[in-house]
Length: 241
Image 1 (cartoon, rainbow, N blue to C red):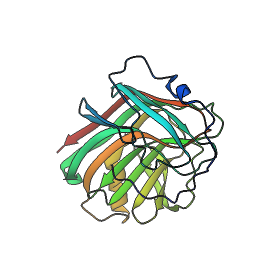
Image 2 (cartoon, rainbow, N blue to C red):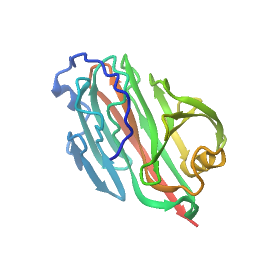
Image 3 (cartoon, rainbow, N blue to C red):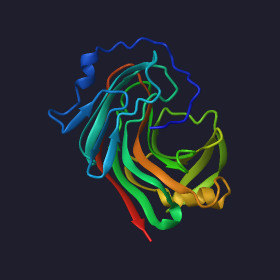
Image 4 (cartoon, one colour):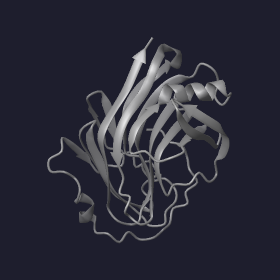
């Protein structure tokens, strides 16, 4: 999957956890698992991706994604302590093939996810990653953030989306981030309404097309140890007019 280009700030610290520890929280005999940089699996209308898009490099360790269904999947990831740049984005989602957003009356998702909050130095967030206009515009919705920074981004406004408060940021020329004002491990995001906010406030051109929508975790650091992320509920809802 195409991803934006970040300035790599990766630390060159050695990973201290043995590779075998990375498998500690993978359930026995999942329907699918992969440690490939961009391992992919299609199931139930969803595309699952390991998406180690900013690897290999010194800060990258092993990452294994596993899945039984959209509501029973996760990843064990080991990324260097002290690293600040996003290295991976294990996710699931759907490819829409550049359909005009005017064709939709709803695009939203429901989720319940878990991150290893007790790990010292964890830097990750659970988020949607939505692509518009043939991957030319990126929109993220951050819902659960541990240790991730918006440094380098410019605040462009505040948004109320279905009663929830977000600050809206722009990174570079074509990435927008809706940052929820509190952490949620379970809830809903309203993708279509967020795109509409960007259009209404002149941040993206009118009439955008929906290319792809995903949900997962952007991971920069797991403190140098194997860390388990999991999803126990997920549904992406798309309704056309």
